[in-house]
Image (cartoon, rainbow, N blue to C red; front, side, top):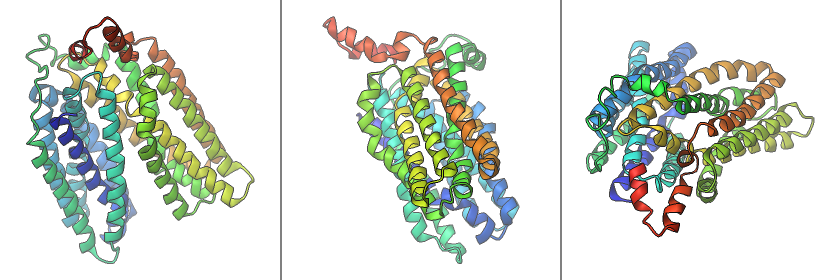
Length: 424
């Protein structure tokens, strides 16, 4: 791992650490501590999603034109201002405005950092780089949330102001770290075919494999991430009688599984077809939903229901650990030279859409339609497997199993580094 990649990973950890301080407590802060009510708190969460949906279509073009580093620095400054604004805002208008700025900054960070990882890695190291990113993100969120929980006091506004100030400081510290990164040369718009930026969205939509991957990505995020803190938690409380402490344990089990399993599964995942790995994740998540069905619809003891519910979150974590070194590198390999930022932004946009729609659909179902909720998302998980198999038919051998190309080069007595660099 080179110096640039190490700094990028430090940046990922810092940003996740800062977010972990505030994200779990945002609703409580707006609704109760500031006394603005549940409606305003719900609007704040909606503003985050809307801001992301607005800026992401432009973020990809900016990354292609200017490079990922300047775009990332601008996003970090915006996020720092938004976080500080949230900590100081005393009325609904100020809170919503600050949330919009913070949400836009957070959204742009994702594709910018992903593009930096692509530019600083090769096809041989990319899966491990994205696995490390996901590991550090979850570790940072967990540690930040743990420390933040010990700092907040719902009777003191100043304790939340301190939290948002720390989050802003983390973003500004990340600006300092990122300005020390010396990015290698990567194809920019002037190196790409003429008119590629102007027609980049049209070109992306004409890439059948990328379109199928975006559809698959929407279902992935809708059926998993979009349910964690909405439908699945509501289902656990209402149908399975899960206590709030047990719900916290389930979330901790999810993070713990990712931290423990991430590098354990990496060697296995790197030697499999990417489409088959994603299909296997769909089957694992289908089992997770079946276990959730037992927790809420079975007739066992409360202890068994709680254990089953915690196991559901752990199984989701196993699937996430398998996806992190698989999906993001595949997006990078599908992108033409110089357009990795555009493709990363498009996939981030799909993710935000799924995270916006998922809670809106799953929340009411999980709270009241227990049986249909489990069956619906079990079928969605099986749909992931079907879509992954179909996607595999659109991928070239180098895209679906890039390690085969490296093995052939070594078998011929050549250097694996040379073709890898060309492929990247």
